[in-house]
Image (cartoon, rainbow, N blue to C red; front, side, top):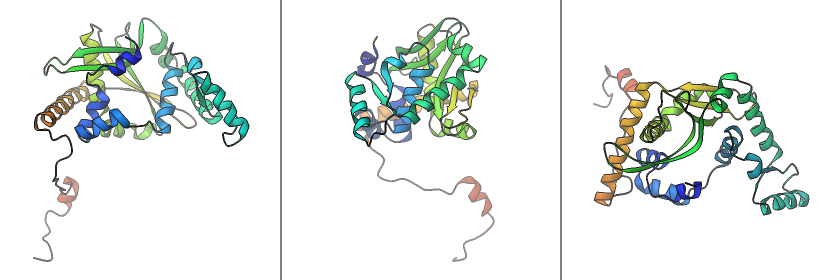
Length: 263
């Protein structure tokens, strides 16, 4: 299956379902149809092409190291685009190369990416074993020999990444990826994220996702599917008309013994 065929397939993917759970089906539909990637997302795509094996980075990207606000820079960028490539500024190019070097210098990271039998940017169409929904996943990287499912992420700060993991529903995404791999007969023993910073010193770290986190991801995946089904059944694809703001537990506990002064 080509990437174009994968993108066109109507099965539900993790990005769509994350948007359903975080927002609404209406938002997820809009994002799938209209959303334009941010510069950070575009940089992340370039990093994937450079770091993951056999992704043809130099066939897809070229360096445009002349200022784009000059005629020479505009002409160079235009000639690169005419070749069907994406023009990267000098700063973008150096960032991608620095990230690649940071990862390749780490023996364990380099081994996971290159040693043994590996699958990279591997598309899978499958059926959710409990709900029967048709789903699709594009797996960043699987080291089949080691049974290691690895997802590559760029981040501004590794220190705060564990918090981002939950707020961005990455648990749902990786649970879906593992489900896809296992449906295709690929044994997955470990699941992890290779996260790398996009600014100096471009530190990288592998986060091992524990089984309990993946269990929660599987539950939240089913919640997203149930929300999707309900929206279609009731034709209420947007947010509910009313919502509620409650005091967070820590704040309620702080003032639990006090009464309102206006009683």
